Image 1 (cartoon, rainbow, N blue to C red):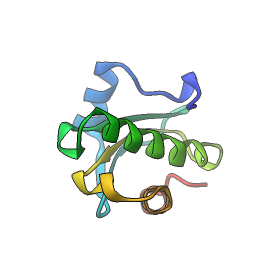
Image 2 (image 1 turned 90 degrees about the vertical axis):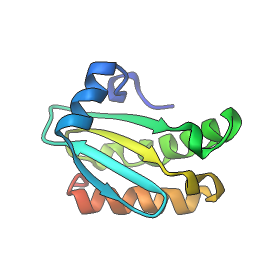
Image 3 (image 1 turned 45 degrees about the vertical axis):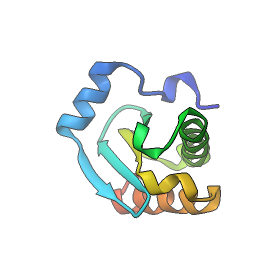
Length: 110
């Protein structure tokens, strides 16, 4: 589970990142981020287009786990990880590789 200090969970925080953040995308995942920050804070968004609640929660768990494994090697930032509808059919390995590639492209990995 993602540490409470690393969660982006307030509406205002999400709105700030959406408004001021840079956007990068892969085929199944989008990363919106603002840097630098004092700590790493990450939020997740999976829309109804991805599927019903069970599918959305599964995708969100996979994305959360993919990011959680990389938090110790990340620079301070605020980020939102969005799932595209095609993410519902992808395995954890594919989503994890896409998240890692986006973090690398954004320069958020140390």
